[in-house]
Length: 255
Image 1 (tube, one colour):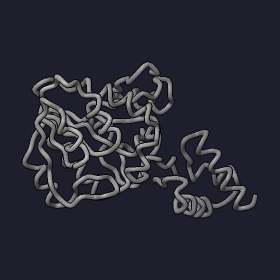
Image 2 (image 1 turned 180 degrees about the horizontal axis):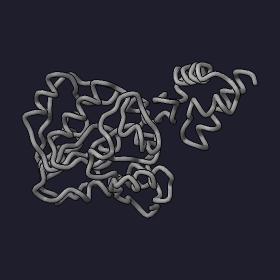
Image 3 (image 1 turned 45 degrees about the vertical axis):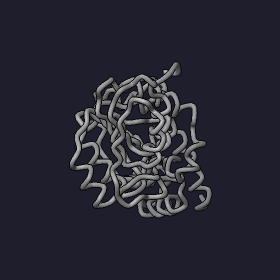
């Protein structure tokens, strides 16, 4: 089998099985694991998969820059946002992550909601300005234009001085074994810091993130109070997450 044919086979398997195991592929094709790993490295370099220990999983489409992400699964994001907004009660102190799904949460908030929102996203803070009964606390620091959030030492230090009832966490990948991941090490560290300042963390998991992984781990699935998603309950990844004892909060009529 030619290298190009082999790599096309790998991509077909990734689309159907949602994972590649290097040892199994080497045995099936009668080639060395080194050859398989070399192919996976090349596919990962082309942005076609995310390498993980022992093989590869699908790469998240949520890794695009902020403006491009606005057009990825907008309906799914709105359903997830509506379910997440319903978790917030009057009087709560809530940390909102940056990102397009979180922006949809802001738009889904009831105009009668009285709460305090803490965020490291200027975009989220600006969207809340017209909300009549929400107090806004914006955490400062160096702004990452890719995600429109503040990260780094100054932002982390500011975050360590606050506490909240809930953190609505945005990630780019939700995977049963790889956990919750994102594409930038500094952002992953900031998300962990924010999660550590909230009593409960809920993951905003629109459809494109389910079963995918990115390079940097934020938290394990067992570290969060729940996953908010509109991905059907019989989806194999959702079944695996549920079987592991993680709470899945159904968003919208498609569950």
